Amino acid sequence: MPKACELKRGMVLDLDGAPFIIRNIEAKSPSQRGAVTIYKIKLNNLKTHQKRDEAYKGDDFVKLADCQRLPVQFSYIDGDIYQFMNLEDYSQYGINKEEISEDIGYLIEGLEDITALLYEGALIGIELPSTVTMEVIETTPGIRGASASARTKPAKLVTGIEVQVPEYLEQGENIKINTVTGKYMSRV
Image 1 (tube, rainbow, N blue to C red):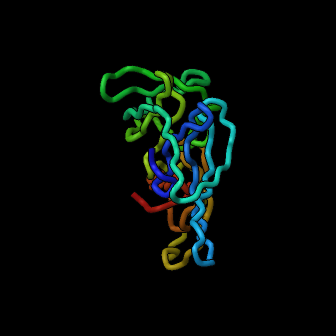
Image 2: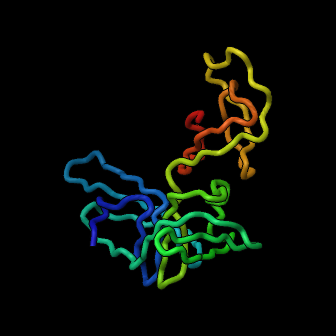
Image 3: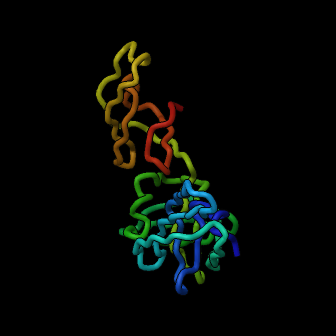
């Protein structure tokens, strides 16, 4: 059992017998002497998708859920079910659209480096790679000499999501997106 100070984003905790994934961790260090650092944690229930906030002292112990992690590849969409293939034994796992709604905008066919979270043999969530490469399908024309300025413009990507990109980017270019922040990182 890890201490609260050892927790990281993406870990799955067992709270009241249910699996909760850590979405965000914020450390608060009080300024008075002898004060203890408090870790404020935002969690999502992997079964019911309810959000929950918890606060722990740095030396509090927390229980990890018995969750299996497998490397998978995104295969295809079948109605509202997103299908993933296990890269070790090629078995298929499906998950409902609502259960991964925050991650759908980053899923393109054949995307690898995804980690599937299995709880009691069922796919209950996914972890995306930290960055994905996507094509810009719609944006205003690039401006010559705009690389010197830090101004941005909206660009629609292949999956339908919109991100702010530098003014010099053109339609049809591939860009790297941070899946945690949803922001443009670089041209590919």
